[in-house]
Image (tube, rainbow, N blue to C red; front, side, top):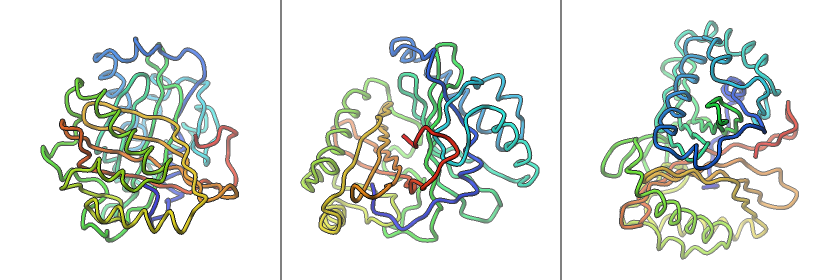
Length: 300
């Protein structure tokens, strides 16, 4: 969700600028949707992030990343050379860096990772969402991301990462839930943010838990927040770019702009949907779109 007071951390964004993409050789939906393939892509993604950023092991780049990748992080150019040049020294500069992965969602040829990246122990760090696209050879082929500094407090009292709803697990639910949860979360998102209809809160469970630091939990608080937000920004537009769903978790990557003149923000919303079709929990990461970029690919 868009309303927030946190700002992205440039250093961590630069660190994450090293991850990935290519335009050819992408896996077909049928190939990429096989459970075994999804699990393999998730395992590769976790290995790359951990080995590269925590250990400074640049050998994972050649094993798992295409040399012709397309980069959407605005702080990084295309190509694996920039990735290797940055990630290796990072582990030396921050020997205790922790890429604390909270949840991983795989859907088709896409894998989404929601993490708390902490450069120095004792600091709150940064909330980061990475989105990776795999090709038919199971190589990482493309990368988008968003990052946001973790604030000291939140309106709801929830942090930006924990799972509060039952069952308290970060793992996606069973695959049979995916079609329903995708449909529910997309319908809610479109009604609230594309059509600006606050009655979308009817999709929320009574115990709806909020992890956006600036929004309270519960349907009433969200209705009030977005009623005021739509009044403040009547020319708001939200362009939904991609939906990634697995089990009871659905992530939506979108471009929010308060006016046609606004560069806007890259936002990833993550929803947890109960088996009865009610949305019970929400996390997000919000990053301003900068005025310039090290690549020509945009953040979307």
